[in-house]
Length: 348
Image (tube, rainbow, N blue to C red; front, top):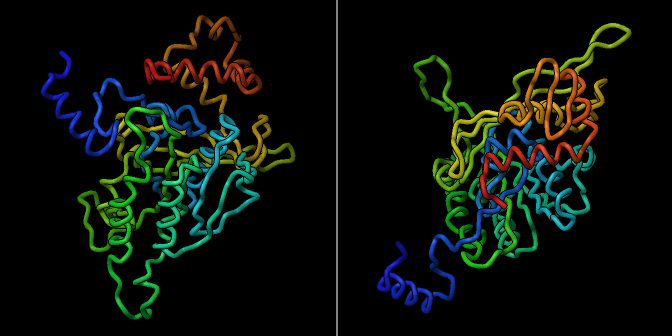
C-alpha cells in the first residue's frame, strides 16, 4: 500500500523547507553503489564489495595484509574506471614502488603526508566533500597524533585525546559523505586502517588478553563495515637446487561488523610478494584459485567424473581448469559476474 496523502503532505513540507529530495519514498532511491576489493571472495563476504558513501575500517596486527588489501582495492577500481582518483593520507610512509607493484597507478593518487590528527581529518573532510576524489584512505590511525598530545611534554598524560578528536570527526563527516537520495552522484569509497592493541587490565575467561582498537568506542558505531585481516600461513615453494623460498602468505579476512551483509563471515586469499613458479607474479592474488573455489561453492562450476564444466567450457582435472582461469581474463570476469549476481540479485 503506497503512502497516504497525509504522509505525502508532510514530505512536501519537509522538502519545501530543506530542499527537494530531502525526504523521498524508499522505493525510489537509487541502489547502493559498491566498490570491488580486487578479490572475489572478499567481495562476496562483503555482500558485493565495499559499500559506497560509508566509512569502513580494516583492523589487524602488524604485517597482516591491511595496507595490501587497500592497495589492491585501489588498483582494481582504477582498472575498472580510468578516471578513478584517490586521496591518501599517509600518517606512515607511502611506498611508491610497493604501491606500483600491487598494481596501483600512482599518477592517480594524491598523497598527503602528515601525522597531525586534526590536519589529517580536516583534509579527509575536504576531499570527501569536494566530490573530486573517488576514494579517501587513512593509513593508519595509530600513527596520528592529536594536537593536545603534541603540545604537552612526555610526562604529561593525554588520555583519550585522540578518541575525542576522532569522535568529533565522525560527527562532522556525515554531510561530506552524504549523497542525493534522488539523483545518482559520484560515490565515495572511504577506508581507514587501524591496528589491534592489547587491552591493558582486560580479562578473558579463555585466558587470552582481550584486544581493543585505538580511537575509542564511538568510532565503532560510525563504521558501516569493520574488517579484520590476519595472516594464517606462509606460502613456501621448493627450489630445484634444494631448499625452499617464501613467496607469499594467506590473508584471512573476517567481518567484525557489516550493516549491508551478514557479519562474522570469513574469506581467504593467497597473496604473493615474490614471483611464483606457478606463474603468479609478485604483488598478485591467486585469482584463479579464488575463482575455482567460488565457482564450485555456488554451483556454477560442476564436476562430472574427472571433468569440470562451466559456461560451455570443460577441463579434465582441476589443474587444467585453474591454468585456464589464470590465463583467460574474460573467463574470470564472466565467473565473477555470475557469482556476484547470486550474492546481489538484481544489482546493477
